[in-house]
Length: 398
Image (cartoon, rainbow, N blue to C red; front, side):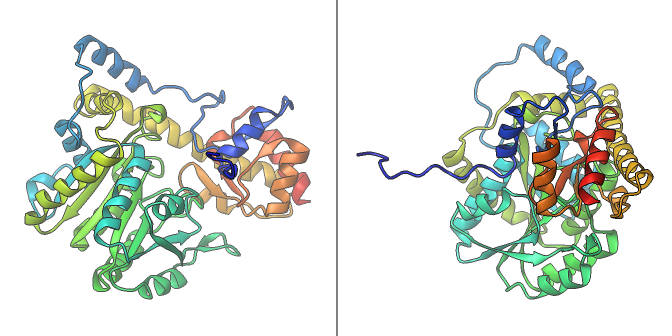
């Protein structure tokens, strides 16, 4: 009988928690697990810039026909300028090409399938820890995966000495995945000198490099957050970059992303693009259009672009405020654990240092849902629930 011995798949470690949260009857319940931005009212509101762009888009009465496999050319041009810098296409020092993909996850899947066809014996290396979906994406394409050192649990910061040492040990021809900014799940980012040192090691050791760049604008600003990606692109001969517009444009359900390949050898571009399009055809065929049209309209209009920067700034500053407020609250409560490191972390996520036993207690006793690793979505904290959250953490830690 078909599927007779089929076993139920394990629940996603993050989305599975959301199912539990939805079934929880506690009126004070808080979901700090799922990776979605929420405003101070606990809502994932649409950006004002996006609402205005959608009105323009509606009046344009565009066709619903398929987009090309690689997507809209103007959208890709604007995206390249945003990520690599506005002068990148004029300077012609590196030559980026891109494909519009179904979200950042689609970009990761596309590059994993592409690389498996041409470098199937390579091992893929991820930071330890990394985003929960990284390994499944590449393992489902047939790759073996391993980890390189990244985070110092005792000091709640990057363990750079051991990180660079472990990267130096990666064999030539293997693949590494780096986080461009707002490292998920730790919130700890590399500085400029560290990016340069890593880029030089990767070049010297001939390591295939992928940069997952899902949070541009959420750490320090759109230009500031691109420094790591631009350093890699400048130093490395070749690099793949997976970008997402879910967080920085609030377009979660539209599934807007890009896969970029940047090279010093212009002659490679058309060959690589043709092979990436061939691979994309077998996965999703053509990219979604609505979200990319919104992004294109915003980036092509001075007023809407300024409004978007304002929307993004409000989002970023609220997250920073919640980091500071959570730390201040815990200090006032006399919490035994020092949480000051949270203030310096970047983006939506924080590796809180709360152990798995205490994570379970927070869920079972206080209906506060946190990923088992202790990762907290800071954007789930509001002025309305922060006292309950900090009080609950203090009770558990004490």
